[in-house]
Length: 458
Image (cartoon, rainbow, N blue to C red; front, side, top):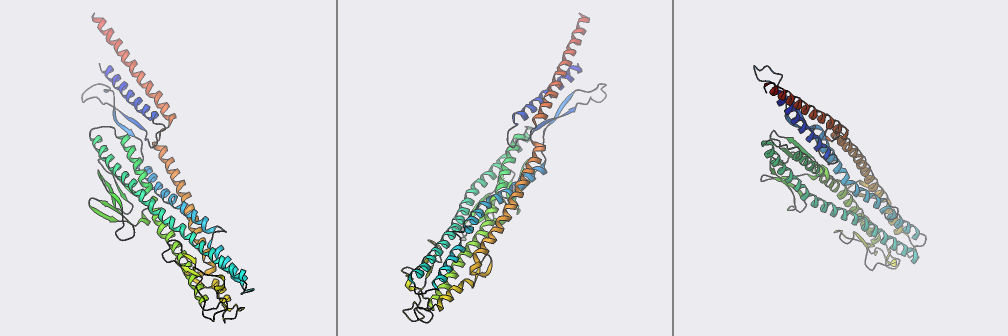
């Protein structure tokens, strides 16, 4: 009887819908889970058949996903990874270089203040010793801040090296999931859970670098870097590596036997953030501190060499600062064995003369050329460096705040389409339960009619 067949298809469809609803409810708190549903369609009667139809069938299982919103989610994660990765480094440098006690400005001011104080009595041993002490403190300030930049450079390198294996693991996982999804889809298996897992892997990959994702007709996804270099194509995966053959580390991506060199400042994500910070902020700042220490040491030592300590005739001054061009162990130090009596303050050899001391004091108003800010007065150099760093940091903080907001909005947009709503699922649960019970009631009525018909012939 068609009435039984119709009711049976309805009850089976309701049962499948209830199973889908229960799956959604079970994954209410599962991160990245995309809710599912069933598409019900009526089974039409055959040609020439005078009947209402042959019930209902499940045409397909639905996966509530919006490709545009998913892509936006990944792009937002790339920006968030980039600015999040950079900010801690900038904040640390700001605090160290901007601190009143440890800044280079403080060390330079105290050194020249000690020189000014010595001008009252150039022959005073305590005042001359104060100059030597201030010079040593200034050297330590340079060494301390330069060491922070060197440590940050090492940290950037180590962080990049730790990201690369994670990046490659994600790429391999995406390629493997592509293969599994393609195979399962060909067999008619529901691949929603596999697609969810792949989307989460892609989202994590996007946090490391900006990527482009293309959906293929066979259900696989091709992944490439923002610059077009391929990472995943079907079940084939590329790999990221660090090439040090040229002396400086260069990121390269290998795919199908071909290697592509990458500009890590333009990668986006955490890798792009690290590369951009290292090359455009940290290294120029480090070089500026190096140049500042070098030029100051040269100027002070050159001026001291023209003077006299009041005992030996000019020019007989000895260098006060020792500059270390390698930077290892510190940039600057006081010349070994230097004594307060060695300070060549006199211009004409007279013990009380301060002609050369005044020339040394004037060095503060001379220009130095720095990589980050160009030509500036020595007394203003550190202020210029800290000011530029502060501007860069403030800009990064603003971009970080914006990217955090965009990421949250992207997550909310994705959730509006794809996440499980418990109220909606509760309604579905009741509706499909009613549908199932109604179809079972139809079967019961059909059985009664069938029994009544048999009884008529009994």
